[in-house]
Length: 195
Picture 1 (cartoon, helix red, strand yellow):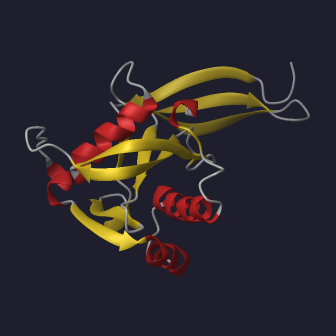
Picture 2: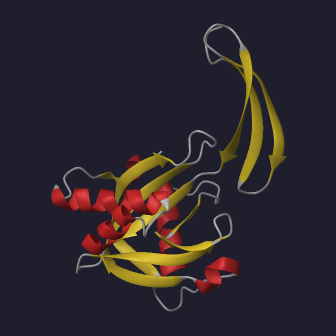
């Protein structure tokens, strides 16, 4: 066996979003050590930009940090067989009541690889407009109080760098969008490249 081979894998807890597992992992030198981590279903996030260069950000309460945070419209990859860009479009409609005609892949990020395999795919949505009134979604729990704000992208960058925005996906999405714009969008990947 080589370093980092997994000798055993034990599930400790499971819910609809994640499980907590313990792997017995062989370390360099041959010692085997237990490593606990969270196996996550994955997520998508959306940097939605309007024609005025503003980004759609939501304010959402997060129980784990007991704060209302600035975030991107985002959500879980929890519909079997759904393409990732379609999941992003669904979350944009559900959380921000918006649709977009143009989609690109902005970034793919392991959010906390020291304790989780969670990966979020962040999409750039442009040519944005309101979703049809007939397409309704009832928000519940924390989502019932979501507040949509249109923030100038440069101001959002300042908010990210000053610590006003602390949600990792939002920071990366805002900074990535600013860099993409500075490069005339030439570094964007097709939305279908998301894995």
